[in-house]
Image 1 (cartoon, rainbow, N blue to C red):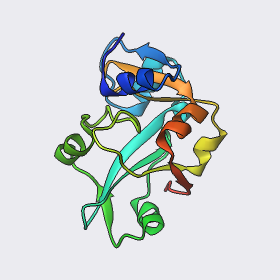
Image 2: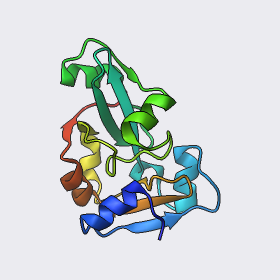
Image 3: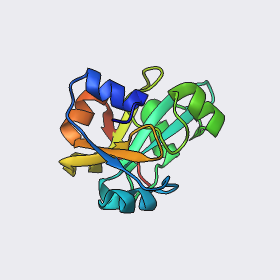
Image 4: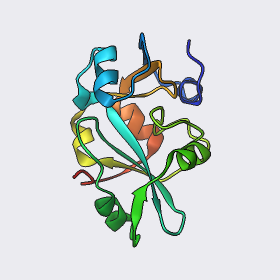
Length: 154
């Protein structure tokens, strides 16, 4: 079993999940979906956003969509919000860009899911490692993250 903060957290919480190993590191959502044999729509893209005051928010959208920082900013009442850089992502989440999931984080963060994710019964998230993904029930993921929901896609 792969040992990452994400897999440890899921095991600790007693959440059933399926580990989906890759034969090579995935650099894009499309590569990850192909390696896992799933549709890119079932992938959950997790993006760390940061406002000018230092507030960090994890925005989660379907793999085929893009986060709109302006929409997230509006929901959190921020003046300006941008994608965090690689150094910031690792410092805040404890995970490298491309391996961030909305669970197993270094510190708790506010999480927002795009409304469209509610239509999924099962989803794919990063395992915290470029060599595998995790499939789990959407309800379990939502229960763990306690996200707010909104229209946050471009």
